Image (cartoon, rainbow, N blue to C red; front, side):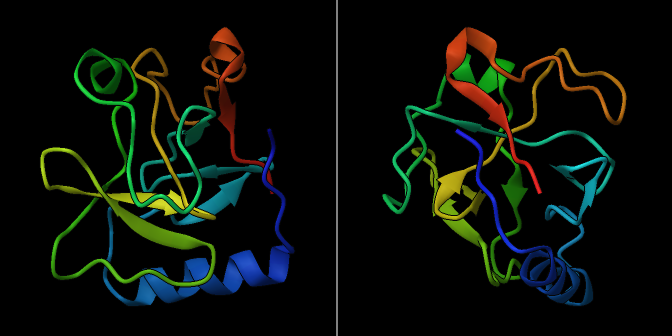
Length: 126
């Protein structure tokens, strides 16, 4: 599943997050996919339910697919970017209501080796 959003709306939402000081937030689209502040590719998981406010990727899953962390007290949702509360009480960024993650084997910015993993992990396309 690819989540598409008008580029102008996504750019506005991401710019708002940048000015809000949420450095750990997804900050931009690069080469057509959403990346976090260090340029690492972000993914969604089909088993997460959009709008549920939860992530179902915990324990060993979250070790391989680290959640995109959001700072409690300073993270500000805007546009397609929101927040979910993890089982441990920490906050995680979401995109159109789906929690977002990086992939541990992606070691360099721009790598997308998790796209299509087991048919349920997908990059977030512009």
